[in-house]
Image 1 (cartoon, rainbow, N blue to C red):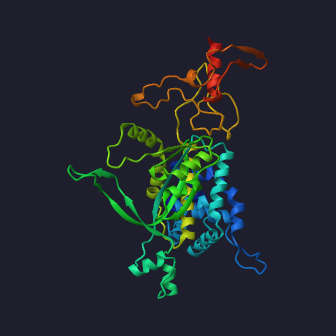
Image 2 (tube, rainbow, N blue to C red):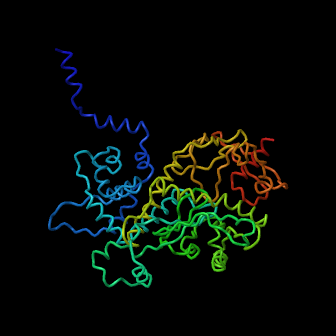
Image 3 (tube, helix red, strand yellow):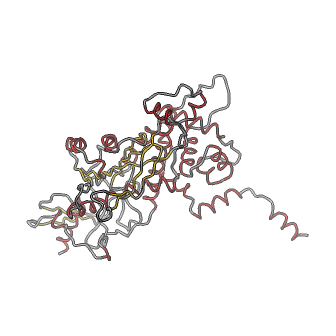
Length: 472
């Protein structure tokens, strides 16, 4: 009888079953838990509450859901490509979703209509752009500065294709609305999106075909364009703007340039090479790194092809962002109109920055502990207290005057070590005078160096040269 009672008790729910299940999810590596630890969503509260039009509840009524909680719901919806109804269902079904937004099992869950209304209020207030700017300012405060130059590009985000006659298309192109359309028809047709052509790579025509060229792929697409500018160093989206799908890429260069980037190089494809854009960069003191087109009717010169290949290795990094948004996030526009499309695309850009920060803080990096002659070779982490140098297993945010030198790090094929050019580009010049060591109580040494340096390698290059001289 005692064994039967134990078996009956084992099948009953316990007080700590939910905690044990959440503990198992954490042990398995819950990405939402990691995201909640990295991102402080409370920094968005002031912008969110300013955008929401809520009553003072003097007449009573059900209390509204917390503004930050609802914003986390929109982040979940963006990360997992969920509709409003599916978001409500998954919140009720998944413990990891409940833990991320801060709800308990006994708490009410926002329904699909509440989620739609919250997103609609953000759209009417234009709050997503302010949220994006708020997070970018937070990144800079934490040390994730825009460095290394900026990469500019645009991609088409597909939207629901309207079924229109040629006469209706002509009327919409002229800025009007067909007179025979009823209000329900007007509400279901996207009049802000535009058709465009996505062209594939071109190939040379067959011998004897003259100067004609053939297009491998030409796909008509309806939707909007997401114009972005990222920093080369960390890969964060720093600026973006949304237009209809037929907008010219080069015409949006001024809207996505980041004035706060610490470097002057700007990488972009051939669509951005124009006299107006080159003049714009010259006025701002920026250096264009634009791709060049093939001369019409002639073979591509070797020096132009070599320059395009060099620039493409840097410029291709922005394509990783577009691939992540379209493949992992499944980014498409299912709403109607430009206002709602800006919210959808803006949330996708913001969600990508969230996941990018979580990845940068969580990924394993090669050990960059200083060699015996280089103490404190890595830059300080602003999120940690200072202490004795140790192996930095995670990438550290850098400031404008610090760079992380990792021993053995090489970009050459085959693992060949790159030559040490610190003496050529920075550090102590050949006319180095000397160094002095002053003993201070507490086993602390202060190195005073006299010499000339252009500081292009930062303080770490200077310290390395000084310590090498002292050790010799």
